[in-house]
Image 1 (tube, rainbow, N blue to C red):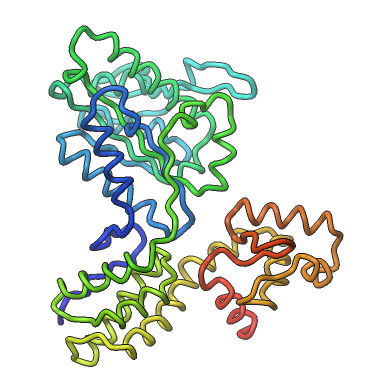
Image 2: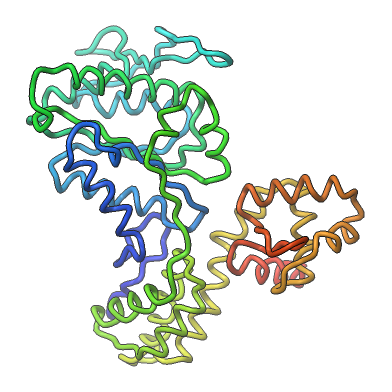
Length: 380
C-alpha cells in the first residue's frame, strides 16, 4: 500500500508549509544577518490547528542547517529549570530549582532561573550562566535557537527569567572585542494562542516580547492550497485535476489543519478504490471524514475551554448558522441584559471564537464549528 503524503497529526511536519515561507525567510535572515538581527526574537501566534508547532519545528531545522544548536521546550511549570538542564553537559543531572537569586518588579518576584545540580556541577546555575557556558563551546558566529511552544502557559516568573537572561547574554556578547560575524548568537521563537498571549504582552516587565517580530498564522489562500494539493498528490504517484484540486481547496476553508485532513482522507479514498486518480467523489468523502476528525481535534477542545456563559452565547448564535447572527437576537434567546451580551461578545472576539460581521452582527470564526455544534445538539 502506498504511503499517504498528508500528515494531519498535531505537530507532524506536513509535506508543504503552505503560505508560511515569509516567516521562514524572516527567521533565516535573522540567523544569517548576525547579532541584533530582528528575526532572532520572534512571536508566532495562531489558533489551534494553524500549525504553530509545525512552524517551530521548521524553524529549528533552519537553525540546525546553519550549525546552530536548537533547544525545544513547551512552556509549563519549571520551564527555566528544564532549559538549564538541556544546556548543561551530558551526564549532569538537575537536582532541583533554586529560588534565589530573585529580582523584584511591581507585582512579580521572580527567580532568575536558578537551578541546583548534583555530581559534577555543584551550587546554583542561572539561565544566563547556562546559555553563556554553552555559547563558549560553539564555533565563532554560531549560536543557540530556543523554540518555546504554548508560551501563553508560561508562568510570569519564567518569562521574567527568560527576558532577563536574554538581555544579559546579548549585552555580554556585544561587549566582546570581536567582529559581529564572530559573535555568538541567541534566538528565541515563541508560539502561543493569540488571545491568551495578549495578557503577557501587556506586562511592563515583558517589553522584550513587544519588540519581537510578531507573526500571526492566518488562513492560507485557496489558490495556494490548490497548488499544494496538485503538487503533493503528484509527488505521491497519484494525480488530481485542477478543478478537483480547487474544489478540495475551497472545502478546506484554507484552515491549515483542515487542509491536511481533507488531503489525507481524499487520498485515502482514492487508494481504497485502487485508483491513481483522485476524483470529486473522493473529495466529498474526504471532506465528510475530515469534518468529523476536525470536530474531535479542534472544535471539541475549543468548546470545552469556554465558560458556561460563553457557550450559552455561542449556542444562541448557531440557530442562524451559516449566516451571521444579530446580537439583538442573541440577547432575546439567552434572556440576558444588553451589557451581558456585550461582555461575552467581546470575550469571544478576543479569543477568536467569533468575529464581527457588520453592524450588530457576529459570526463563528472557526471553520466547521457551526456544523460541529449542530451535530452535537442533534446527537444529544
